[in-house]
Length: 257
Image 1 (tube, one colour):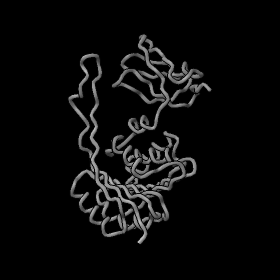
Image 2 (tube, helix red, strand yellow; image 1 turned 180 degrees about the vertical axis):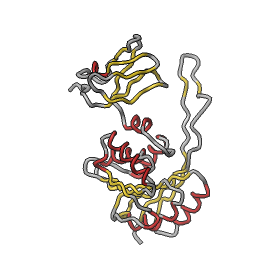
Image 3 (cartoon, one colour; image 1 turned 135 degrees about the vertical axis):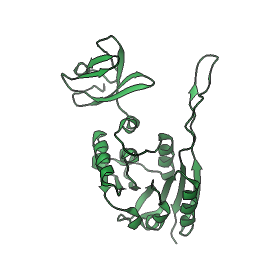
């Protein structure tokens, strides 16, 4: 069945590998770029992936936004996790449809968007954040991505305790994750996974020490590096720049004492 663009849909306007724009399609609305303006209403009823030309004759493509597009284009005041780290965290925690997940801190909601997309329609994400202004940004970003209904945003300090019980995973991206480890152990169901992202090795050391004071197994810390490739006939090579260190991911699985 053909997936067509309707009024009110978000689209990712693709110009080239470095320039894309996340916009909402509305009748009688034009979108202005340095390559001219586009009449977005002309896309209504057309299939995702269709091309559209600006008044200057420059061709754009109307792509259906992926979760990654909402993340990379979202409004934010905080540094978000890189997709390379999000992807591994999701794999290591085993999160999927129906999972119940505790997350802290919410920040701009980038990881929250990823988790909500995975646990729907029956699962739930409980996201803790102590900064109220960050929660407002996260709510707006979740609503834009159409995922707000699968999340409970909580204006609470998770170091003081976790209200939920028998959750499948606890994911931490905050300055003092070791203070949350005892609460995470109580909140997790048997075999549930604790995952913590930390930018410094000192944070990792304190977190692992706290983990080893509780019945966890498969305690592991990894770092993910990503290097893009320039591909062309007789000139394929790694790009000069790469996404190197962003942080360390520590995971552990709960066993029953």
